[in-house]
Amino acid sequence: MERKLIAEMKSLGYSVIDSVSYNDVASSLKPNEIAIEYVDYYHLLGKQTYYVALLAKCSWDKPVYVQLCTEDELKACLGNPNVTYSTDDLYRLLWQPLSEYIGDSYTVYFSPSGMLHTIALESIHTPDGSCLSDKYNLVRLTSTREMCKAKQPKTYETGAIYGGLQYDVEQQRMAEVAAMNKTELEESPAFALRGEDRGNWNYLPGTLAEAEHIAGIMRQANIGCGLYEGDLGSEESFKALSGGHTDIIHLATHGYFIEGEKADMNDFMNSLSPLARQKADSIIDPLLRSGLILSGGNNAWLGKEVPEGIEDGVLTALEISTMNLSGTDMVVMSACETGLGDITSDGVFGLQRAFKMAGVQTLVMSLWKVDDNAASLMMQTFYEQLFSGKAKREAFNLAQAAVRAKYPEPYYWAGFVMLD
Image 1 (cartoon, rainbow, N blue to C red):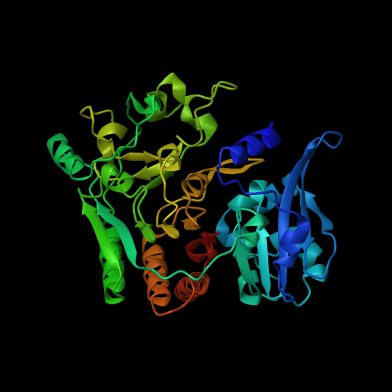
Image 2: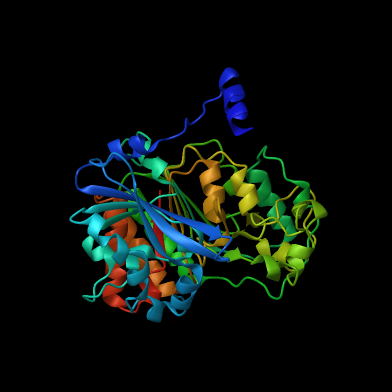
């Protein structure tokens, strides 16, 4: 069916990404580079999930297959980040079996799978007391096929920054702000009914200073910058970015992800229309169970009525996935757990999947709850380095190193990841 669909799309003139072979991936690598595609599979006889790695080098005519570990062994290693990333357990499971093949490779491209999406592989502790990113230039990819796409160095010209948002906004003011940013995106019936949650979203004072500082850095670099703060960071303003060419979008706000079994205990999730539930198992769509809170979001979240024709301020991953952000090179989510979602054989269904579906090239996100001060230092340093002429991944690594120097415990710095 997939082959037939691709053939039909080609005949209608649609652009289709042709299948990528091992040779395509290997030929895109330089002699000092290696690519790792992590894979998980369920073994019926063993009745458990196994993790393996497929490795590619330009000098190899076929990939190397390496058996790694079971999912139970991985789970036993995970817990408090300060413990997880201060022991050699993850190194022993995920990296040591590959070390003889990696050799003196400096740049390592890798694509996670399954539970590995929740692990900061870049920050794994090594036996000599360092972490992997100290030794290698690690590049996280949604798939190693990304390496086969032609990419030109990006010159940044425009940006949109959200921070210091007010989550409690009067309905009349929401209507006034909505009128400033009319959008033609249609809303799914799944959002028609609203409910309440255990609590509201509190104002984040640190995000205002963060947003204004970053806006200042951009303007000094002669980058056209839209700053959305207070009640101006509406859902309408964000959706108005669809179809445009905003090079960088920075979101300093609340993020949420609700696990499937917990959704039924969440009143806001339960208020969604039956169309929000997947037919197969009646679980609420994972792209609805993750999202970002924008200006005025507390009204709908707490069950207050939102006037008809006005967005509610709860920007779900599903809504993001319907946007056209192909003109955006990078989205930076300075919020908690923005890298999480439902883990499936097709990847993580959450904010990262939504922004990729919308066409964004690079994402900066977090794998767990972030500390305000550490996040602020991370983001400000990142942009200072980026607009001083550094490539975005080099700027990210330098920013993470700055946080690590001030806050040595892995909880503060290891959770940030960059995904291409």
